[in-house]
Amino acid sequence: SFPVNLAGWILSDGEASDTLIGLDQGALALPHQYVLIMDPDYFSSGSPTYDGLVPESALVITISGSTLGSRGLSNSTAETVSLLNPQGSIVSSYTYTLGNIGGRSDERILMTAGDDSTNWADALSQHGTPGSRNSVTPPERDLGRHRHARGSHLVRGSRQLAFALVPQAVQEAGRRRV
Image (cartoon, helix red, strand yellow):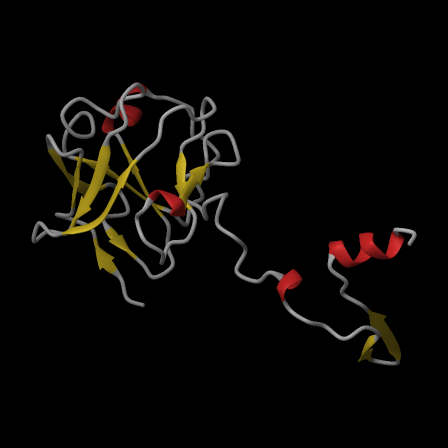
């Protein structure tokens, strides 16, 4: 992992393009840092929509135009949004869906998977997760997928602690009468 300078990168809707511009924090995205690209109208209008939702650790940047692409993103026609590097090569591209629940955007499920629609889903929370891990991204560790021995023991100081990790499906199956 290494930092990526997003200055000069481009967002496009296929009709027009906008250059990414750093704000107070600049445009250098650090490894594992989340980046939030916001329309400049958000800052000039004084909108409180995302107040308190964007963590300080997120890199917040904007675009060169007053709206993304030729006229902003449509809520009535699906558009393809592409991210291009400074050399003009498409790095990522996605055609967003329509009909989301109000205030919920599309979110990429796995950051390292492809751009096709099967890797995207409606956000699970109102206003999504700006500047944070997407709400539809699975946790880094899913204990339900790992095998653990029953009755494992930990010794801590002079006390012995016993624990058992049992997946929910196993617990519920054990409650059923045969």
